[in-house]
Image 1 (tube, rainbow, N blue to C red):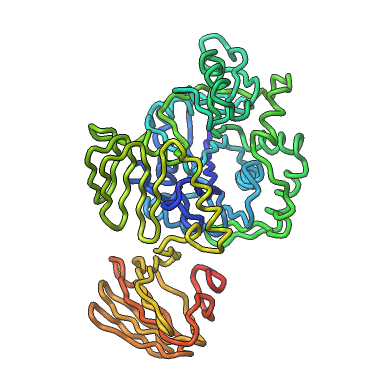
Image 2: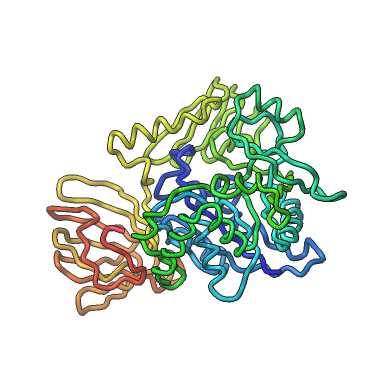
Length: 489
């Protein structure tokens, strides 16, 4: 039996601002360990083929992501040194049902029909072994044509999650149940009743089914979505690891979730050949959807504080304290979230963690970009960070990854001076090629065709001084680019 991990990575993670930004959202951050949430998701199924006597073949992952995040996804796999089946790019977000349809269509291009293990990229699971055991059980059911969802065993009356109501047991001795109904996020009183009854589980958004089963069910319940996705894939193209669907066709695709498009309708169908099944999952799961959730899943000191970075706490209790750039001192305060980054500081009552969205809404309305970008801006070749700027000048710190290169380009309005502070740089300057090492520099006049490459095995660090009448990122004319980017991307 083949299992194809499908990782859905379309979220923006705005409730974890200022660490999570639209251009670099929470799934790419190491919020609960050394690996990012995305990387932990990729690694989560390792060993699942040893959890059962069945013959399981774990395939390389397929990722469905926002087109703007394609290089972040590729870099996450590069850092893990892991193979993947492909990165399917959504030109616009259309929720999880179309995203899964794109992955299923990719999976069935040949004669294969694997079991899809569908996982959001931004969840945390502490008990990896327990997770894999339940997945192995789900794979057997999915291989028999069942559509499996995983319900989290509640640890309390949580009002921030949707719930799943269990039906009757699937068979004696098997911890699996018919899926009776999905329930919207309840108020506290109702949530307390759900937990007390023992009949409800949290909705995890994790699913298993054969690719052909999903496509058949989607065509039955939401033929408009199925048709749009087929057309988008048929009109798309593959560029290396990236699968680009037809933008015009996909933009007309209706937006809907897996739950609403299929699962809720399927739970009402009395058809043994396509029953919706729920498996209880008790493996330390969290969707880490708010700062309060980060505090809950993190290690704490004797005063209940969770700290990261250069932090000092005195007579402070139950706080989440994150220092990314400067020292943070908390004195005589309780139950706060304090998150410091180079360009923003968040101070929040932990009980009001969901209200971070008021900040991002303000930033959008004010046409500011702190909700989109960090001070450090990531590019497929590495990153850059502004150091200083003024009238007709700008200073940046560039980091170019080993083996990476910026595009062969030219600027109409600015000149650049590059100083190597670490590593080795190969510089193309019109017809000239230079090899520069630490403390060496070069000048790129206005209108000069140029490229910066890192031929070494260590990151290349450059101080770039720009000068000219216009310093915007859209003043780039690209002649060659190994990443096939448009101007300003």
